[in-house]
Image (cartoon, rainbow, N blue to C red):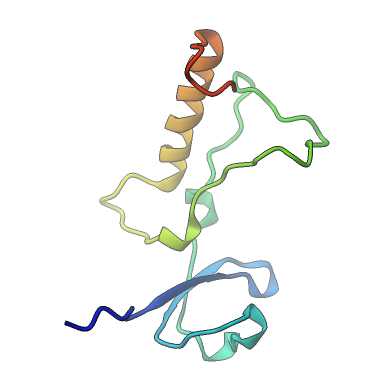
Length: 111
């Protein structure tokens, strides 16, 4: 049984717009990717990030270099109107962290 990967998914941002593209080609560096020859699918960024709510903790304007800023994994993005939008998944996660902030537990990461 051949266990080789059939496709690679790339998230690209030519001209400021986000797209994902599947390709059978392999690239050692991103500079090898020819954006014009990829079959790009636009990513609806309105469906990726929820709108900010004042009830959420806001990050400081300067973030410590040892901090991790989490965001949605756009390489897994596939638009399907029957699926829960990525922005809703991110929102649920933020709400869980906000709950942990109000009710901290010593064995769970601090938010």
